[in-house]
Length: 293
Image (cartoon, rainbow, N blue to C red):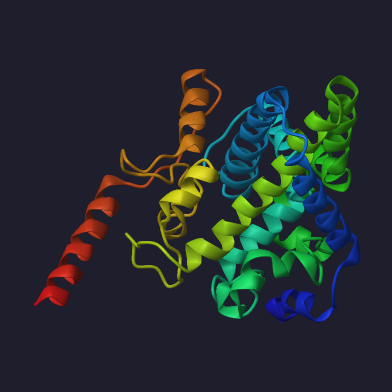
């Protein structure tokens, strides 16, 4: 019954509010190419790291969604505000979408499985139906922890305010070039990077762990999402705060969490056990030998 309610999002047609903003931001991103300046780029890159790494990866995903580690409330709220600068919706809606994805991965109810089409998995799902704007009943079911927090409830409603304030400030200080690059181009690039985790890392790449879904590890998606592209590792062990488990699996979000640990700000950090990693590698070796035989 619950996943029937979730599936109804695909039957309500285009969400014109979300679609309109997507069109405007994509036009702005294209326009930015004609307003390039080094000053704009110097502002854009740090904001990309702050919004995509600190905000979405470390904040929305590994902290709020999976509780892979603990931080003081002030740090949690700071990371959450950073995440709103990515314009990926309110943090509670984001968490609900992702928890539903894990609950129904590749099954009926999965908000963005590629089994419903590559376009649907990448961007179509965000343009139709609820467009990641869930009703209160579903939010309380899948994110009861956040729905009890007044700060999160308020910011989820007004998630667009921090980005709006930032945009007006950047325009006042740097003009059109800085605005178009640090807001429009950065947001669009970040959105597509996140959507590639939903689409590409369920279509192409390698698999270390045998999971019941189609999740894969894809290095180039990991690079543009600060480590979120090690998606098979993540789906095999969702609550683990570290996704890149080998030295060559670059995971900037994990490095950030490690820095918080050094500062005494991150505790109860969950990771994948060495025994689980060894078992997966042993199973992979056995499968390769059978194929070669």
